[in-house]
Length: 150
Image 1 (cartoon, rainbow, N blue to C red):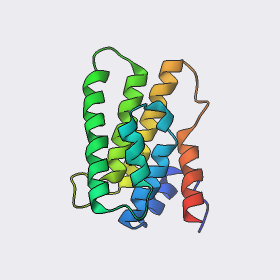
Image 2: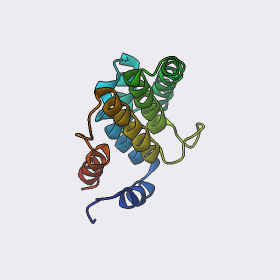
Image 3: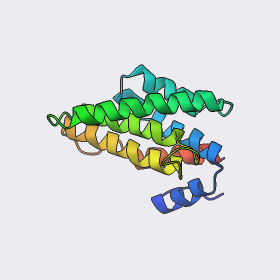
Image 4: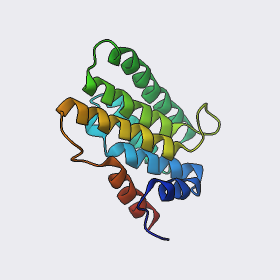
């Protein structure tokens, strides 16, 4: 397999994965921004997401937990522009995205959705710190995907 070095190649690669592989890869994407969300439910959800042997009950519970944090932080982040609260929201949304399955709403291409949400989280962090892009989340995702696929 060729090395992934842009979004087009990443999208093609994740589209070719099984739903389970998409979930695990999506969980790995979320793992790279997990430090932006302190909620233990999201951390637990990511642990379940990256477990290839997770049961349907574990997956459903983790999805509900991540979704609940995503909904709660969505309502919090709109009050005052608290960029780190918004980052936490996007991390939780990414965790929920990678745990979504075809049998749950929004379950198409969970790895890609998680990738986009984690980039939003990283952008919020960058705005909060008022710094340029020290950390390019897309490049991190290409590296994660290359490692996953090899």
